[in-house]
Image (tube, rainbow over all chains, first blue to last red; front, side, top):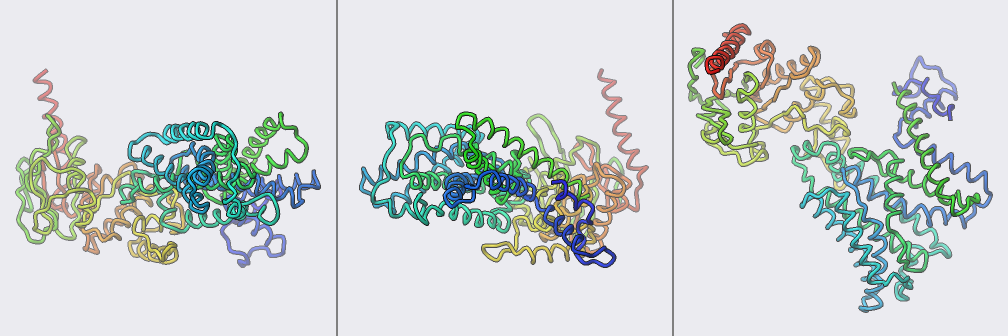
Length: 353
Length: 268
C-alpha cells in the first residue's frame, strides 16, 4: 500500500495540466491518486478492497453468485441499513442501542397482526415499520424532552422490546404468514432474483441518505447539532427536532431490517437481532470515520465500514475458519482493519501538508 | 453630552439619531447588584466601546441588550420607541445581534454553510450550494474578510478569521446593532488587526451601529467613535475617543481600584 500513499510527492490542490508541472501518464496517475486520497472515505475503501481481493484470491467460490448474495444480501445489507441510522445519530451526538430489538420485535408484530387480528398483510407490514418509527419517537422523547442520556434511554427501551418479544412469542419461532409471503419477496428471499433485493434496498437507502446528509438542511443541522449544540441553538436550529427525527430514522431502519431478515430466512426468529446488529453498525460507522463524540461522519464511510465487516463475516467463514474461533479472528481483523484505516488516514493527512 | 466629569453620571441626551438608548437600567441577582443605574446611548452608524474591569457589569449589560435576560428595572428604546425584549430571538428580529466569544460557528461545516446557517438558500429538497457559495464570497470580499476559500472548513481557520466570519455573518443577517463580546480577547496582534479592520470598514459603511466590549483601551480608542467606562454597575465616563486617552482611562480604573483597596483595608 506504500505505492498508493506515494502521491504525497504530488502537489495537492493544483489542477491537472498546470504549466510548469511535469506531464506524462505517471504524473496524471499520481495527481488522480492524490485527488482520490483526499476523499475522507478513501482509506476505508482501500481496506475493503484489500479484503475483497484477499478473499477472491483465497477461495474461488467467493465470486460465485451464491456467495455474492450471501455476502451482500445475507450479511452486508442489514449492517448497512442499521449503520445509516447509527451514523446520523452518532453525528448529532446520540446513539441507539435499541435498534436490534426493534429488529427483533417488528416481524413478530407483523405476524400477530396478520395471524391473530386478521389485518391485511400490507397494512401489517406498514404498522410494523411504524413501530420502529414510534420507538424512535419514544427514544427522542426520553432523550430530548426528558433529558436522559440516549445510552440509557435506548438501553431501557431495548430491554423492554426484548422482553415484549420474548413474552408474546413464548420465545418460540413463528412462520412467515402466508398472506405476507408475496410482498415479502420485495424485501428479499433466498431464492431467485429476489435474493438481490436486500442489497438493492440497502444501496438505495445509502444513496438517499448520503444526499440527505450532504445536500439538505437536515444533514447540515444534524452535523451542526453534534458539532456545536449551543451554537446550533443560537443560530435558531430546533435541535430537539433534529434528534427526534434521527432517532425515528434509526428505529425505522431497525424495523425494516427485522422484516427483511425474517423474509430472507423464511422464519421469524426470537433470537434474531438483539445487541449484535447495533454493535456491528456502530463499529461500521466508526471504521467509516464517524466520530463517537458527534459532529463528524459520512453515510458513504459507514457503508464502506459495513462492507468491511460483512466481508470479514462472510469471507472468514468461506475460507474455513471454524465457527467457534471465528470471533477471535473477526475481532482481530476488525482491529487490524481499524489500525490500517487510522494509519492510512495519518499518512493521507501528512501528504496533504 | 460630549463630555462629562469623570465622577459624574452621564445624562442621556435625547437625540433623535440614537438607534439604541437605555435609561436607568439596573440588574440584581438576589442580594447581588450587578448593574445599579446604567444610562447609555448609541447613535446610528456609531461604534461605541464599552470598557471596564472584570465584574464591572459589562457582560450583564450585554445579556440585557441582546434579550438574553430582562433588566430588574429601566427602559430600553430602539429608534426612540420603547421595547421589552422577550428573548434573544425577539431582540434579533428587531435587528440586535450579539457575536459571542464562543462564536456559534459550526467547525465541521464550510465557511459558506456557516454564513447561511439557518438561513440556507434551498431549491427544495436540495441546498443551493452554488448560490450560497457565490453570495458568501461576494459578501466576505465586500467586507474585506480574507480567507483561503469559502469552501474551507471553519475548523481550519485562525481565531481572527473565525471571529471575522461570525461578525460578517451577523452583518449579512441585516442586523442594525451589533454587540461584539470581547472580539479581541486571546488574539495576537495580527489576528486582532483583522477584526479592527473589519470594524473600521463597518464604521465607514455606516449602516450598522456597533457596541464593542473590550479590555484593550488602546485598540478601543483606535476603532471606536466613543467610549463608555463602566464601573461598579454604572457608566462613569462617556467621552469621544479623540477627547480621552489610554492614560485617562487607565487612571480612572486604577483610582477606582485603589479606592476599593483602601476601603477594604479600613474595614479590616
